[in-house]
Image 1 (cartoon, each protein chain N blue to C red):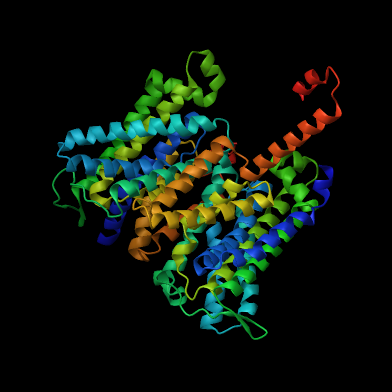
Image 2 (cartoon, rainbow over the protein chains, first blue to last red):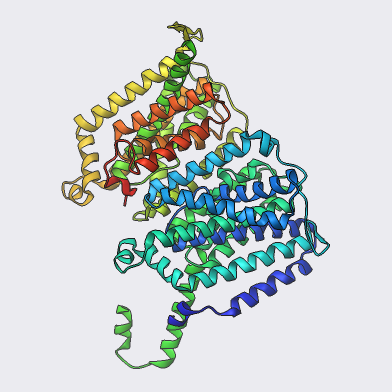
Length: 344
Length: 292
């Protein structure tokens, strides 16, 4: 256990990368590829939100706003002003980070329900601005004509090349996040999550770490926005509203915020559910997009009631218990230990 | 001048609705320390149930009462089936739980009633009344009258009856309340039923003005939540003041600046107030920890 806190194994990353790389060979239809590309984009946002919720114990009901800022920054700069998308990537990361920094000062003083309200209000304000600032964002009808990303003369188009581009970024984000949580920052964050007062008393600058994680999560969302904007020819504010924020929240809750892999699994599972609902919807008439919403609501209720930590941490702890049990059964068959074990 | 009176009155009308919804939040919060983000869905259910009942040919007044009873039953059911099962969860999980409940109810409503907005007849005739050069629809007057009635009845219920004493006892100390033979579980159920009833009333009185649809609840719920946060969580007078304030800000913003960005203005103000007073207008500092 101690070892796990200090460093992370590359085994998980290697297995996961292999799965990611082999996916297009197994499912080559463009429908699955598009969904899988979106899953990669959502993974980036969910990992950031998971850091914020599971490690810093903060909630954000406005994560889609950072996602939207990232997308619109690059859309406006690269289309209206003709800048290179790689240059606007910097802005797509910096703009959400700056906003998060400014907002973080407010958030640092808020807790629980008040924090939820502030992030909710922020998300709505941004969504309204994206819709109403028509001279810049082109309003509710959407922003058209976003250029594609190019690298050394190669153009990334929607499909297999974009799939690999998105997942390359997603893997970088996952590795980065795993590094963060296994570093001093990660330990400080976990202590804040368990008890803010106690970690403050131990000399952890709780405000600083919470702010850092808030900024990191906003930058991840901004990166996802950048990828999303250049994947599609057009973007509209509808993707960045409250429903988006709730979708990201559902992913983290489902997978479990206290583990990076939890957030990843959450994003993948929700994407899979969306595919299943979509496929089932073409056969059964009552399964519509409303049904998807009902399902998300139902999942959130079930998870909070039965598995408050989320799927991945729950399964991990169960596996660990089983392992310990079998190890104990093998090692100590002596009398009297049974009684002792019950107390453990 | 006429304009500003007109804006003020429409602001007070919608603000009254926010105030009733916010009182629903406060009712549940003060008894159970849960913020029920599904509160807005009760408002939606109020409007939509009324529409369906009237369509079935049930007389207006009976449909009104029946709607309140049905929505109260749903509120009780939500507490029994969902909230009670997650007893002792932290605020973060409770927020997620009630958001889940909200989108669940909204999705079901979308499947039952479809996506179109519906029309509900006003309580009395439609002819606007002229006051100081501003025209008010009778339904706006009804909205404000109902808000005042709700405040009076709630005040009487909480301050003057045994039930209210039991509510307050559970709020202050659930364990001591249990020793005094008050069941916090029962009070929790009752508070959900009561606040669902409040939501239903809000939905009923606003229905003729707003044309209810399956997705009206989410925004009304958020506005009611921000009204109760604005006033200071757990404070009933704060909820009413917060609601009216939010309504007026929104209406003035819509009137003088742009109706498209009215939500940005009202939530911008909420953000500013939280920045200056992180515990709301009337909230006490220790309450400002967000229920922790």
